[in-house]
Figure 1 (cartoon, rainbow, N blue to C red):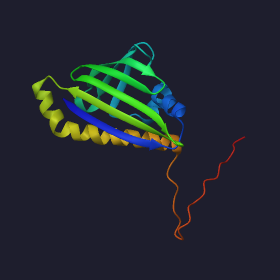
Figure 2 (figure 1 turned 60 degrees about the horizontal axis):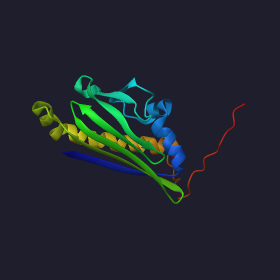
Figure 3 (figure 1 turned 30 degrees about the horizontal axis):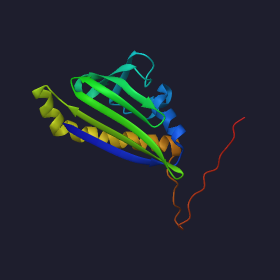
Length: 162
């Protein structure tokens, strides 16, 4: 069993994180460009829905992900296809921040694909998970504040458009 797990802390509320994890238009903005999500049954990330996750790096080979559990703090997906297992998204408040966990546990039954996954595929997947969570954080929080030459932090100015 291969287990991959990443965490991120975001300066926002759990409700905002949930929206970004479940609304298709927001999900597309931070999810990996290496992944294609294709709804098969139901609306993406709703309980009982099924979607195909295809990897561009593997000539769009993929697996079906079904939402097995969903509440206001976690989504558990079961995975079947070229790889089998489960993916957990969990989020919870930690003071003024929200901690987000992404954990994937899977097996690769095909011996030739397993060689790729256990080798370079696993490293690429770990990097991709980290990048996705950082993109999620930046999308919600905005880019990090810049430090000026004199040590002060540059201020962001909100501009209202008419």
